[in-house]
Image: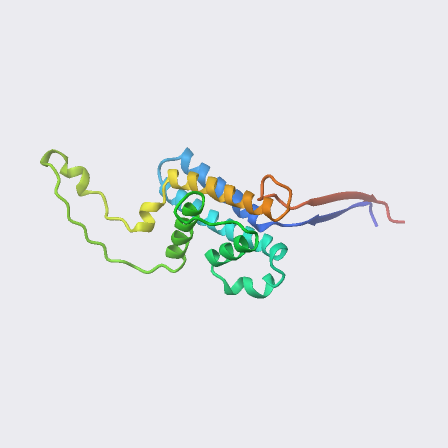
Length: 192
């Protein structure tokens, strides 16, 4: 048998970190190319919501022993409330970062459980400006929500809330969306 190289790989995957990175990539793509950017910001927000829920699922077992039995029964806001209650973190839904997270989860639910809508709008415009308004489509609330400003602010607030949870949980402070470890080795093999 000719010589060969044996390659071994191991990787610990943190889905919350992968989704968080996807959210960032989509946000940057929207910032770099204005054409179609609304779709990029919308997708970035969805992946921010997915990343946050995955983070709660990652940290949940460290806070609540029965997490594996209850996690699929709870909505994302219920997971957040339960984790924060156990860690003695007060959630004020009327201020940042919690207000942004509440809006993000509402957006996520609107998209995940979406239905068609019939929109009607009437406005009065000055004659000299009516053409601009004429071609602007009426938008749903979830469509209005998806913007660069919202995507940036929401990522900031999700990171802040996650860092607080991480610190209160006794995990090392710092960035909560850490990628898992990986190990790769290559060994030359000469068979006799």
